[in-house]
Length: 112
Length: 84
Image (cartoon, rainbow over all chains, first blue to last red; front, side, top):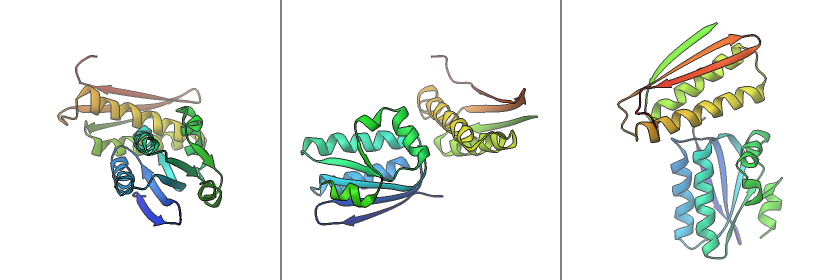
């Protein structure tokens, strides 16, 4: 499944709903979408990962890069709903200690 | 059973390598988690070959071979980039 990204502006948070495959060919697209909202001045972001069927290190690099940028503005990127496979990848990379991860979108959005 | 694939050493072709190894892993009756692990390993290795071995020049090739033996799946990846 090709990568699909839907961005919604909520009261305090920019919500990214990402589905499909995040790999070396598509990760750049996610990075650009994140960068676009950050440049617009948004620093509170939730990425709902429920629809992500596969994520490689290329995808991890993009979200870490975006996290570093929002941290400079005292913001954060929080993750919601990762599948078992994506959770395993996050844990393998040690990113479960860097990102706050929530089981539901509501909890992730409400955490801000 | 042995399967082989040659791809161009380009990021656009890495997906082919992933699909190839998923097919081989499923044919070898690996469970879903193991199939995913094989796919990820091949994805990362091939991406590294393209980006670091060939420095994204896209003028090389990557050869993949899978073999089933003793309830295991062996995956062999060879490339003709300069040695590290």
